[in-house]
Image 1 (cartoon, rainbow, N blue to C red):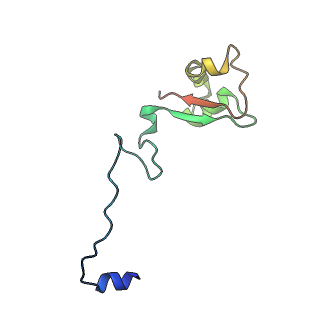
Image 2: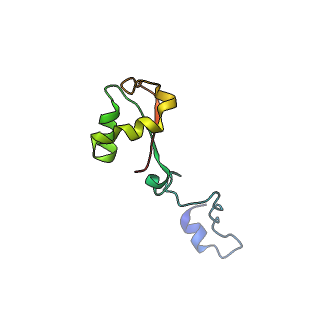
Amino acid sequence: MGLLDFLSDKGEQKPVEPAAKTGTGATDFFGNAANPAATGNSYTVVSGDSLSKIAKNHYGDAAKWPQIYEANKDLIGNNPDHIEVGQVLTLPSL
């Protein structure tokens, strides 16, 4: 059945209803939180990254790297200079 067939058919057929929304809060097209700053973001470390580079890219200020470190201390360990490619860091909202 084509679009024109559907439009010209006066029978019992009706368009499909949108799926019911589940969960709470607004999301974008992909299901991500509409306001990620309110919930914090995640970031996957790539080659050449440092906490200060990540802070510069996400917060506009490289000096905010300690906030990223504190939020991820359990994952990173005692040395903030030792992050590994593939680690998924939490970027706290500031």
